[in-house]
Length: 117
Image (cartoon, rainbow, N blue to C red; front, side, top):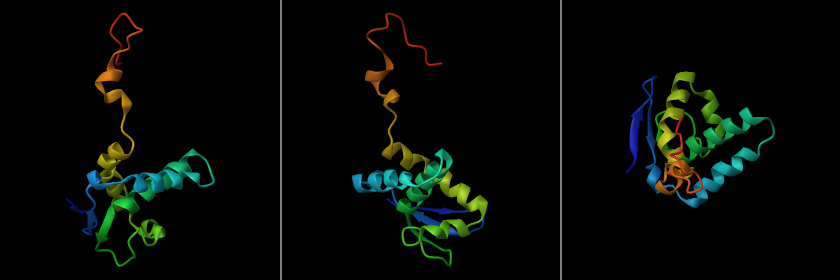
């Protein structure tokens, strides 16, 4: 189910349900990290592409990011940061943390409990 959020500027954005993400979406996000530049440029490209995959509609007088990724550059910083925050659940779907599985919580080679510390 899509979620409609209101950004700090008052603009509204409709985001796709992260559970509806597919392998093609993951590949698109990962491919975006092939940009030139350092780690920060790659991280920003990943984040922007994830935002573009999730946004279904918005009230800005700009093309949605899946049509024109540079539209994100025209947003106020607070709105952009709110969109980044709204992608956290989707990040978990695309990049699950293996350490959260029961199988990975204990290491049979270690005789004592693994520190989670």
